[in-house]
Amino acid sequence: MGDYKKLAVWEKAHQLALATYKATRDFPKEELYGLTSQMRRAAVSIPSNLAEGSGKNTDAEVARFAHISLGSAKELEYQLLLAHDLGYVTDPAYQLLDIEVKQVLRMLSGFIQKLNAS
Image 1: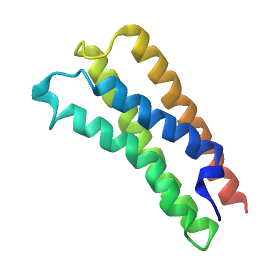
Image 2 (image 1 turned 90 degrees about the vertical axis):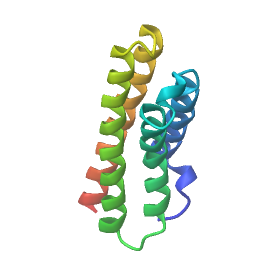
Image 3 (image 1 turned 30 degrees about the vertical axis):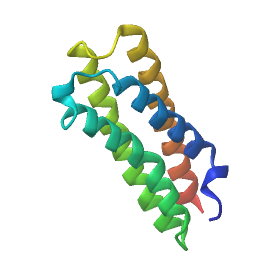
């Protein structure tokens, strides 16, 4: 497939991972091994699986890793909601992150459809 860094969906997912790290920086210390860690792992999983999938030989294999990314994005979507409802993320920050997650979800779905059509 080639260089994953040239994929628009990977770039958007990478930016989401960076934003997630920034958003979780000020979470309560008791969440360090809980929600903070879970959100960061889910966010990093999205571009990581796209990168790993880019090294595979067939579109079906690439699509499998993109599906894993999709699952991680859905996981992060919920975790952001939970963090917001717990008061760890402000309304404006939540709104921005939620938009970013939804954009990544749409991009991943389109990417998977394109791969499946090949």
